[in-house]
Length: 134
Image: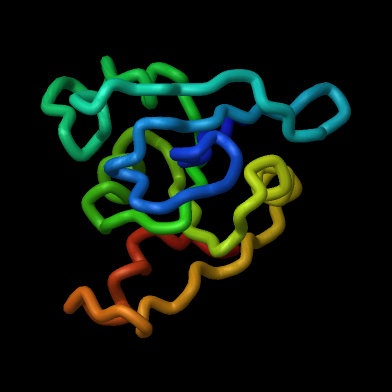
């Protein structure tokens, strides 16, 4: 199982996954621990938001992740990843290694912060494309 985490600063989990150009790649080692095995540092035109090519040729999908962890992502981003077999997990967690470990353990991540403090004009239902609980 390979997990990609949006991390614009390569230290903590960041949001706006569709515009993120830096991702950490985690995999399970032989002891069941999440270990960082690589990083993606994409040019601007390869952020998923900008990318116009075939999904199969995008570096994110070439890395063949099965899950992506981010603090925020739009429904179109989530649907696009779902079509490529990647489950998107939205979370308020900030520690990439810990979050990857949580997913590997089959545990739920902490929910993302409610967006009520800044209104973007999309209602509360807007996160539900991404969540696959249970």
